[in-house]
Length: 121
Image (cartoon, rainbow, N blue to C red; front, top):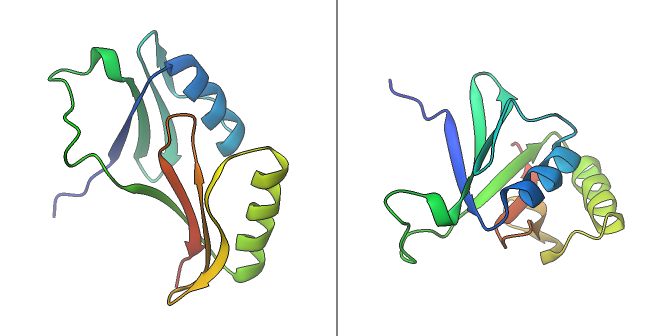
C-alpha cells in the first residue's frame, strides 16, 4: 500500500514559518533552503514548508483547504496544549471545545493554516 509521507504547506515567509514550527514542534528542521524547509516528524513522515511564490505550478485557491492535526492521548493533554499555545500568543480559529470526537481546538500558523489538536481515539 502506498502511504503519504510528506505533507507540504504553502507559506508566505519561509523563515518565519520555520521559526514558528521550530518553536511549536521543539525540533530543528531536517532541511532548510531559502524557499523550502522540512521537518522530520518520525516514522518517515515529513512536514514541508514551501514558499508560495516559488511553488510550481502555482497553487490555485480551490482545493487548498485543510488542517494539520495533532492527535494526543487524553483530554488533559488537549487542555495542556491549549493553555501552552494560548500562552505563546498563537492565534485560535476555534477555542477549546468538545465536539462529537471529544475535546479539541484549532490554532492558526502565520499563514492561517489550521492546526487542530484532538484525541487519538
